[in-house]
Structures are given as C-alpha cells and as structure tokens.
Length: 216
Length: 238
Image (cartoon, rainbow over all chains, first blue to last red; front, side):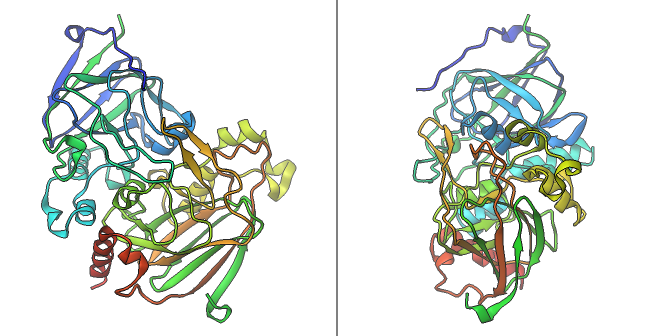
C-alpha cells in the first residue's frame, strides 16, 4: 500500500487560508519557498489543478513529463511536478491520501456530452471554471493555456491490460496534500462540480487551501 | 489500402519531423519499415487550432491507456479528430510523452550538427516546437502527445516500463481524418526507451481517400461514447 506522509506545519501559522466551494475556481500566485496545502474537507473531492511558471505562463505543468520523470503514473509525496520547459514547479512533500491522478483531466461541457449524454452539455464543468478564472486573471491567458491537469484526491488506476478505470476515491475528510514551491508559480484550481461519476462521490464539496511562508 | 488508392507516399527518416493537414475523407497509414519505430504525434483542428487533441478526454471517454483499432482521438471539444481504423500492432502509447534536449543529452551524449551533419540528435519536444512554429503555433500549443508503435506498461503500483520489441518490421497503423486535422509527427526516440544508443527508425507515410464512417463503422460502434463523438463531429460540418 502507498506510503502516507504527514506534515509538521501548523494551520494556525499559515499566512493565507481560503475555502473554495465546489464548482468554483481559484487562481493565486505562490512564491518560491512557500508551502502550499490543499485539504479535502469532506472527503472524495476532486481538485483539478494546474500550475504555471509565474514569469512565463507558456512554461507550465506537464502531466506527461511529470509521470515520465518519476517513471510512475501516480502523484504522491516525493513527486516533482515538472513543467513543459523541464523545470520543477513544486515538489509534493506531504500526502495523507496516498495517490493522485494526472491522466483523467478536467470535465468539460463537451466531454460530458461524449461521456454521458448530449443533453448534459449544460451542466457546470471544470474547464468552464478554468476559463472563467484565466479570463478574470486578465494576463492574456486563453484556452491554449488550459492543458492536462492534476486531479488531487482522485483515483484513476490503469490496468496492466491498458484499461483506465475510475474508482471510488481513497480520500477521506481532512486528508491533504502539501507542496513546496521550487519557483514562483501561478496555481489554478477548479474545485470539480462533476455530478456524473464517482470522482466526487456524487456530492461535490468544499476544499481549503493554505499557504505558509516557510517551514519554520 | 490498395496501391491504386494511394494519393501520395513518403518516407520520414529517423529523427525527423513532418506535418500536414489531413483532410476529412482521407486516411494516413504510418508504417514501421524496420521495426521498433516511435512516432510522436499531436493533432489540431486546422480551422481553429485552439481545438486540439486531448489526451485525458481520449482516455477517459474510452476507458483506455492504450490506442489500437476501434479507438478514436478526441479533441477538447467533444469531437473526433481521427479514428484508428487499422492497426497491426495492438498497442500505441498515449501517456509516455516525449523526450527533450536535456533528456537526450543525458542518455545519448552531445551531438551537434557541426560534427554530425543531418544525423545530429533530435528530441521530441524541440521537434514539435519547430514544426508547430511553421503553423504559427508555439510553446502554449504543446500538448500531451501520442507515441505510435511504442508501448508503456503500467504496474499496479503505477510503475511505468517501456515494452521492448512492441512493433515488428512492417507494422502499420491507419488514421482516418474525421475533421481537417493538422497532424504534427516526429520519429524521435521514445523518452522511456532504455536503449543507450540514439537509434531512431524511419517510417513510411501513405495518404489515400477514405469513405466516411458509416452507421456500422467499428470505431463508431466500439463504445456508446464514440457514437456520440461521431454525432458531434458530423454536426460540426452541418
């Protein structure tokens, strides 16, 4: 079974705390050396997340480079989140869930039409939240900047036969993942509103993000 | 694909790049001439390149971590850029990604044009960027790629391993364009290929006309998701 790694950081000492309700985006800069935690407040909530080099958004999180660099599909403590330019954006340093997905991507109106029914076009979806956030951020980002993301707390195993399965979450209320920023990054989250599959246990719930200036 | 139906054909040498707009109603056959080829590939809707191949949507719509005959490549807009209509290999890798300059240097050493002329080492990322640039695209358009002819096995704990000898000489895969699809390919080595020698392989590309996907098309019928994907693609052209 996967190794779990707890953090020693005290939430009371965090310099930033924000609850993100389900179905809402969050965009925020995190400086090199800061610590960034995402808490699954109610359990089994998919947190769709992208990171960018804060000084060059074209240098951004790369799912394929991240899994290739560690020759492992699942993200957990020790994983270095790689950019398309070969930089380490952040390192996961604590993880009480044990496994996070980066193949499943983010839900969209259009992918919901394919996956579930054409009439489901109008249900709220992550990629709409991503687009709203980058538009409001107003730094020239567009859909071109929305690439394959991380799904924190989501369990999407690949079988030896090359199948991809969506399994019930392995997260629980209060589980968290914590990263150290290795460079200045822009974080973009969509707290997933998906109601069509078990990625949120059919009940999307809030998550909390915390930032510490140092590990002291 | 009968010989007479081939519109044109060309050989892409080892470690080279290629791009072309595959027209709806044509098929591209990629043949592994010597065996052990790797073809890194990314795809865009030529009419609006903001619509592009989407690895997660492709994998999750079909519940797959491999590509073979009967599966399709989805764009982020719920449409099918191309379908895999023939395949003698059985497994093409959609997750392993591409090499880059640093990785290539660490595996194979320095190799520059000055010393090696056209045999200098090419890597997947730089090759994609140069070819994207020819179409007015750039680093913001780099996306997760497919690796035709390569296979990456995933163990239960998530460990990824390159599967050697996946594609014998003469293997081929055939893509039917369902939209006017900008295809950008290169024959650089797979990033997880453990071969310590830089040894890319050539492939032969053949383009021929294709019948549109009928009501009984195997790609359309392979999953209910794909039936909806074809419907959405057909609506785009109405």
